Image (cartoon, rainbow over all chains, first blue to last red; front, side):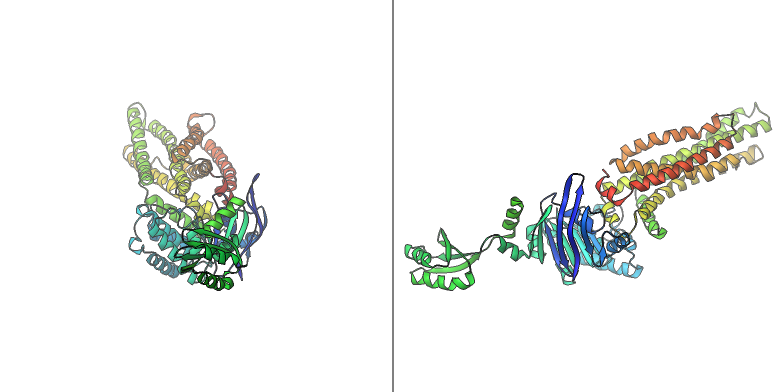
Length: 308
Length: 250
């Protein structure tokens, strides 16, 4: 079942096309990463899906509701949680009052509001500071509080716009771990990020956007999509007989060497590697270990973005 | 429109103002200054004339002055929103809290009404407290010295009951419109000050123009204010829309 669905979603600002014919589906309980450079249209897409701005053309649905229908917009806003790029907290109100205010706006009953506020603040480690004005909080604490705010009404769909931007590694890890906890709760999460490592760690699927949708797939699929995988054989030393034996194998498309490593390009490494190892050993090569070299998500992302 | 939703926004804004010393001090200082200084000036003026006038003439002069001076409270209700309304809207812009607020299941009208009410309540509240002090001091003095209560008068009642709230609404709406185009609180307050200046001049017309009775002029002014309020309401409603705020508010 799709929780988010767009079809040729487009948004123009005057002559500028910010989002161009984006079609995607995000399943229930999926963590969907949205990668793209600055100005790629990530935030505009999220704003359209949260019914904050209108679309120019195309279709978009969140849950069972259509972003186009006036009567559905309030229902969409009620079922989604949104963490904007800027935390946007009320600095001279306490953490508790910030959450309580949003809980009321999201129509969370008083008892549940209190329970959720306590649970979220405890989970994120800021319960002890609940009565302190937010102005005195560190960036990381503010970000955590903003995440708690997005979750106060237990939304089915969560839009996170660069949740770990500008956070120190420890705070970023806490936020990432929290996203993984939410994933366990089967919430649908739409994650806008620049952070490739983060996307790879937490997302089930990733879309690369540069105004148009360039590619969608799991991190593994994307990594495979760019170049063939390479087999790397670490040898005690490379001798001519080994090189000759390897080249004789019809399955090796390309061989290169680097120090004591043989780097081989093959169509089907799982099938061909045992033959390769036997051939090297028979040619007198002393194998230390065999590894696989894959292109990273960063390689894929940079290639896709540069090519577009 | 769900008024309870608007009230949540209003209550939050009131809470924010309570925690903001600059706003809080402005709200406390204004009624104290106006409620005490204006009567002191008035009483001083009357006492300097007391020896020259009969009791009846003194009461007539005192009534005229009381009516004139009660117009000063319009300055308060028009001036305070330049502090509070601009802070309310530009403060949200500066804290970047408008976007999460707009993402909640509330309509544009509910948010606009809630925020406007949040700015209006402290302004009108502080003005009425100032008026209350003014009435107590003036009537206290007049009952002792003139043997009669100077307030209420018809003109004062019109100013207090109709003109002050209408002028407050006008100022809040004008400041919302200014806030949508300005990013700096001080700049917005300066622009707001310029815009409300003509209104302040208008308020003193009834005391200056002697041909038309003060009460009649006050009624004309009330109608003019009501019409302007309605016009500004539609203008501020057109400006306060999610799309506009996120894409055009600078």
